[in-house]
Length: 385
Ligand code: SAH
Ligand code: SF4
Image (cartoon, rainbow, N blue to C red; front, side):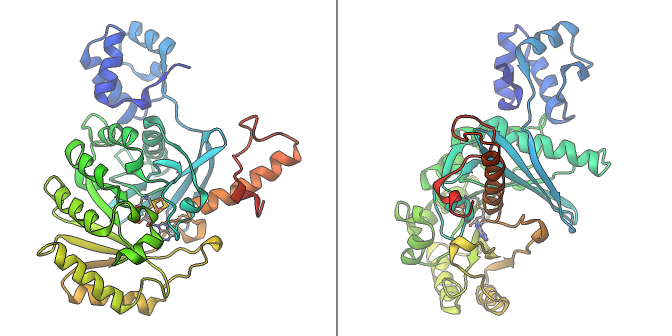
């Protein structure tokens, strides 16, 4: 198969062009066509010499991923399910807000961390996405949205790596993909508007700080190790104290002067006022002043979790306790509820679809394990299939 140019950051594309005997500025032109104009066809690239276009046509392509489905919510949220081959699918969500458009991007098919409250975690790990598959989500969405909204200007102003997967466990693809997002010749997004969300892969937080510091969100979810071990199994490897130290080291490189902590509100598990006080103590021990913010996420339930969303009163009391202690706290609005596009519902939906695809495939008598004609089945999916 020919090289997919969505796989390259500008440096990589320069090397690719060099191999074709082309100068660096050609790589820049090509990069701008792909990412600024959303081109997928070399013939569109009118300022490239015909000889170069012919060379490109024979040795390269710009290949997005097939869209399995697209849902547009009443509130403008759009969710796509992309086929990444081999029976795997990932989701991408666009969230329009006053003055900005945020794209929530996936980094892996499935996730190995296995958080209790996350349906991607329950699904298990399938594989890392390539650079082209991460960038391809943005490339596709921006192209679609400009057309859909009749916008001559850029629609996506923010990217959050908060879709399926743990981005810091796919570091090799993450960093070039971030570079494409940040590059002035690419999407030109500011470092403050690109957020990597992590469950706390401590050594990789340090590497990100050196290689490509963007805004950092850390999924904390608990004020102590006993509870966090239970909710986020990675905590057994990188406990809270080490995680908070890594956050502090990151602040020296970060484009913002705070870290955002995400905290999924689970009824009767981590949502009491005592938990909030414990968090306040934790944050104060770890550093002076306003070095972090909290984003409380009402849990989006899915049946296999056995967990329940905190009631609104508990969320308010929790938020008030943090705010009264001087910690900036927001409660995340749930968006795209009517299309199951809220946090942690993504994979659940993929699983539902998996069941549907599997039924179709089984009816047709195709062996899923031999071909890529249907979405992959895992033992967990079989239960309700
Ligand atoms: N793996 C990374 C990024 C993807 S998850 C991480 O864990 O940070 C993005 C956010 O969605 C995380 O804060 C995660 O804790 C949250 N999340 C996962 N499942 C959820 C659910 N069912 N309800 C609410 N938030 C959820
Ligand atoms: Fe993976 Fe994040 Fe889900 Fe945890 S919350 S299982 S790290 S995607």
